[in-house]
Image (tube, rainbow, N blue to C red):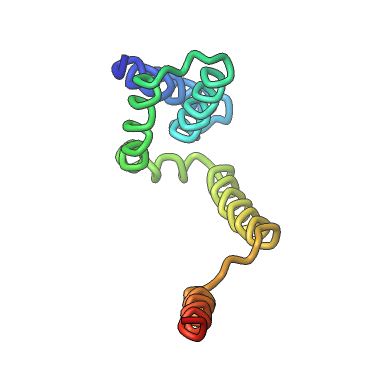
Length: 140
């Protein structure tokens, strides 16, 4: 059943590459546009869909998690194969989309950092632990 997790990842990767090629043709760009990202979204969606229906067995989950951990290096390898020069020469849409994606990511990180709770620093944790140890020593 571990092989089912690997098969799920392979299907998502192939569908992402196909849809990225279709998106490139639709936009008039001679390159795969977002195929790797589409594959990642498909993998997340499939995993959630299987989990909600109780079909994600432990071996399938292990296969998906194992290859999911290796997916970032795979993404880097796939992205390295794409011809960025050809995509950039296809028109300004590629550059505009790239800049927009970076700006959206920066904005999302800023939004998450404002919404999230402030975590304790190591100094605060150590000071609290030191205070507890001092109080413990006083009671002994």
